[in-house]
Image (tube, rainbow over the protein chains, first blue to last red):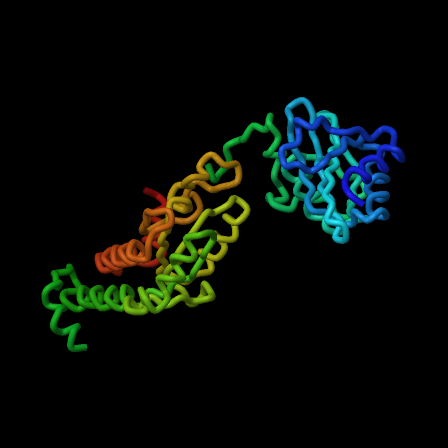
Length: 151
Length: 178
């Protein structure tokens, strides 16, 4: 099964999943835009269909909104697929996929730590890189650094 | 003792009340301290590899009596080699506090001197002297082993100028105050 077949199958099963405009993709990996509400079900479906390996999970700040990007691959078919989830700036939250892919654990904690994206359903969502008493999320574009004792 | 007796007369000076004995004790203590600096290696980033290669056979820091120790309780000196993040800073302070007096600090590389290329970062300490007092700053990014050796020689010169009157807690206290 190649990437196009996956795209058509997912779009048939989940009508709210849409294509990402091609000019946005720089790495050539086909991508789908997915609403936050159905993300967990889509990832579960992908896992059953053979896209069973999570390559990467990262958060991005686009000033008006946040985006969480998931890269999946199939170890059998050598197919890559990306999922993009747009999140509102006020309360960014998307279901954790750690119950499906254990490798998402630390990457979700990183996105929570540096961008403040909430992942309901994560077993241990706390800061991973910064000290636990840190205030704010430094990779947000509107983060303002306050001088502390080390500055 | 031969070296001692040969060299000692040149650096003797009068000391009120104590005479020659106190001053030569100064010289003897400084001589032994300067030539057996045992460092606690604190490699944090790429500078750590230059520090490691300085200890290896080609540059051989053992020639200067510099012999790496794994625990702060056996160390006189700490090499802070690399980028000190704010999360790591309390650990560095703790290790420094566990070292016995007298203790010396060599800050190795741009990152530990000033924060270096990460000066504007939210998570990097702008110089280890914000956390612990530093004796010698070694420049470079990272410094070559020759540069580190030069820093050790400078520290030895500094130690040889020290006196018992200033040693221990008093030395550290004065340095923080100024």
